[in-house]
Length: 85
Image (cartoon, rainbow, N blue to C red):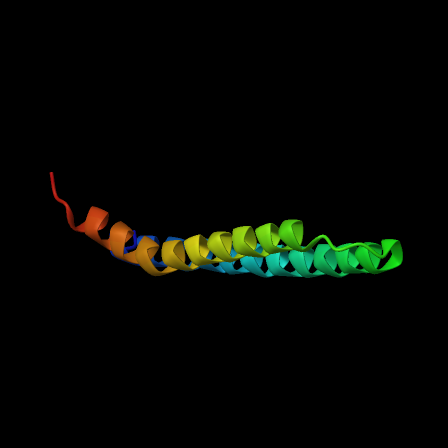
């Protein structure tokens, strides 16, 4: 039977890999939507700067939250694993 820390480390790596895949998927989707939005705005000849800015700020905040989780997640799990009852 493997040591619990080894299993947790593998679990953390799998979670981080999933998180990275989710982040890459989010970025690709945001880019596609951004390009479609820009094309619509140019076709209509109107400026939708506020909504574009809001989307960018929201996407940036989500990306920062995911990066923070990726950095702090393993540390929190290690701390939890170090607690002995």
